[in-house]
Image (cartoon, rainbow, N blue to C red; front, side, top):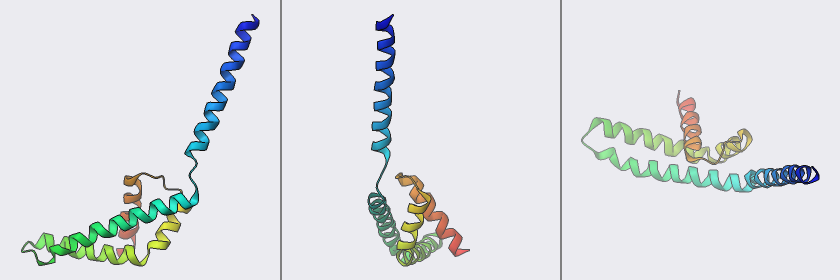
Length: 112
C-alpha cells in the first residue's frame, strides 16, 4: 500500500516539474518578441519591394499589385515601431501566419 502511494506522489511531483518546465520554456521575453516582429516586418517590406518591380508590366492586374505593394512598403516602413508595439501589447504569438494576418489586417484598416 505504501509503495502504491509513493508511486502516485512521485508521479504527481514529476508531472508538476514537467508542467513548470514547459511553462517556463514557453514564456518569451519582450525583447525576443520585438526582435521577431521586427524581422517579420522587415521581411514583409522586402517582399513588397520586390513586387514593386511589376510596375512596368503590360498586365493591368500586375501593375495594380505593384501599386498595392508600394503602398504596403510605405505603410510598414512608416508604422514599423507602432506595429511592433501593438503586436507586443496584444501578445501575438510567434507564428508567421498570425503576424502576417495582423499586418495585413492593420494595413487594410488604415487604407479604408
